[in-house]
Image (cartoon, rainbow, N blue to C red; front, side, top):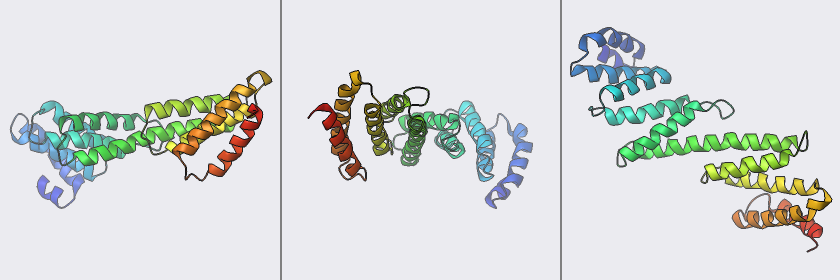
Length: 232
């Protein structure tokens, strides 16, 4: 009856019956089926947290079981589906990445592998975006209570080191250029020439990396101003 409910997409009823019979089948070959269908039922109910717990329980109980590939992938997929907005805590995002990294290493030719890579990259992009938001916040604070432009620059540079292939490369590099330009504009005389040269270098880097960027015109303005200060 539980399987019939499951096949009819009545996942709540299937989950309830499976819970009732789980202890009866414990220690038998059928126990694997009960555990995996409980996991699938919670997936169908969109209760991804519970589904992840049951898939994880399957992995612990049956590390070489007949559903192990599904269980390992779906554990990461549940965390992926539970991953919140980038502005919130990213514990689920990091758990998803860890699961997917383990999965693609263990099963490089699995039917799930391509999806695992895709979802893992999405999670890396989300972490990068969180850093981008942080860098933008520092930039918007400007010189309020200190040199927040430097903080914006450092956060962006560290994000590029941590996530070198993320989807926001242009945004990070543009923010770094803006931050260096603003540090030049707000510089004391003893650091002005040095910061002008740093801005010039960053302008060259940005133009080389993103020649079709919508920011090229403004980059040229930054370059002109910095070269004037540097006496070039």
